[in-house]
Amino acid sequence: MTRQTRVLFVCLGNICRSPTAQGVFEQLVRDAGLDALIAVDSAGTGDWHLGKAPDQRARQAALGRGVDIGHLRARLVTPADFDHFDYILAMDRANLDALERMKPDWYLGHVGLFLPFAGELGEQDPDEVPDPYYGGFDGFERVYELVYQASLGLLDHIRVHHVDAGER
Ligand code: 4NP
Image 1 (spheres, rainbow, N blue to C red):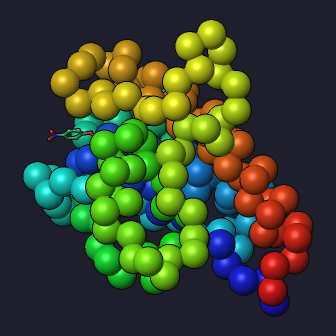
Image 2: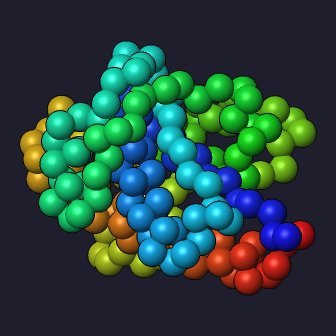
């Protein structure tokens, strides 16, 4: 049997960007019929919102595209996540730095930025998903768009390197 590939999305509060990424990526995985083979979760590096549902604006932006993230609850990244996840993907460099500091020497999975999985995004070609928390609703729509593009690329990547490769 092919081994499950496990993905953890990480941002600061786990109430805006990473739950959006979890919801979007889970939906793509489900639509591809791969939910038995790819597991998805999200977590934050900051503890202000533990146990909270995603920010209302993030819920609204996702729901507008048919993705319901209202059931998700914020949690912290923990050392045990490095035992469990094959891909630990940060929304920005500050969160990547925090993950790099936590990463045990023996970890063989991929810790990196999420957005590069989107490939070319156009002129500015950002590699971070900007923190939308202190901005307006348009920032949340931008987060959704970026996260959606990166999710398409990540699913392709996992298909090629794990699922189709028949990882055993
Ligand atoms: P997130 O957004 O990291 O995408 O969940 C934020 C949520 C809360 C805060 C900052 C960013 N905050 O400062 O409370």
